[in-house]
Amino acid sequence: MAMASVVGESEIEENEIMRMGSYGGKVKVLRDDQESPAEEIMLLWGIQQPTLSKPNSFVSQSSLQLRLDACGCSLSILQSPSSLGAPGVTGSVMWDSGVVLGKFLEHAVDSKLLMLQGKKVVELGAGCGLVGCIAALLGAQVTLTDLPDRLRLLKKNIESNLRDGDLRGSAVVRELVWGNEPDQDLVEPVPDYILGSDVIYSEEAVMDLLDTLMQLCGIQTTIFLAGELRNDTVLECFLEAAMKNFVVGRVEQTQWHPDYWSCRMVLYVLTKK
Ligand SMILES: C[S@@+](CC[C@H](N)C(=O)[O-])C[C@H]1O[C@@H](n2cnc3c(N)ncnc32)[C@H](O)[C@@H]1O
Image 1 (cartoon, rainbow, N blue to C red):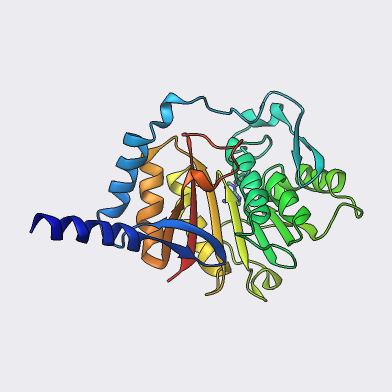
Image 2: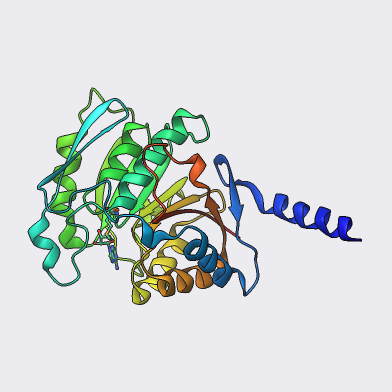
């Protein structure tokens, strides 16, 4: 009897580890019931112990630029630390989640678990634009989006980092405010991938963000969202709402870029139900 229950448990565990969307790596799929978001939060904060590792390990938010090697290029991302104090401005500097997501994409493509060449990618809340730059270097046709007053720095970073010779894909910058109707060419054809780093950080914005994900996402779209474990209430609120319309899976840290992982970070894959 005891043996049967052990076998049963391991079968369930195995079923929760699967492939999702166009990502070839295995992810831990969150169970589709009411307790699941709370259990996920307990697991992340209880086992991963995010507060024990240092925040902003991969960025320096007081510098005017962030240098990072990716895809054989030396990227230099301009930041505007002085704008960070303005109400509602967060995208004027880079956040760890952006570095982690960008390097994850590079690593996953190198490991043949992901194919971005020729794929349509939309980045939400792109900030300084590192993630979108890396996706374009990996061959994707990327649209980097953000709030209207964030686009100047974003454009500058695209122009100064993506030169024709290095570029296998393309990158354009576009305004997209979460919750507003997206331009038609963002949804037609439906994106292959949607990317977002550090976009789950305020309870008020969660529903608008999910509204935009629903509007952009088709049945074949794979969403990658990387985030920092700062606020359990906001993440739980996001997971609760997201799981109504999306299958949510967590990419284990063993699949991230080996030099760019941290206990403060989490990386989710979402596909439409
Ligand atoms: C914490 S920053 C992260 C920036 C960048 N993704 C990174 O990882 O460095 C959050 C980003 O989301 C954008 N954002 C916040 N609320 C938004 C909204 N309602 N619509 C569109 N973008 C929004 C901000 O302008 C900012 O660029």
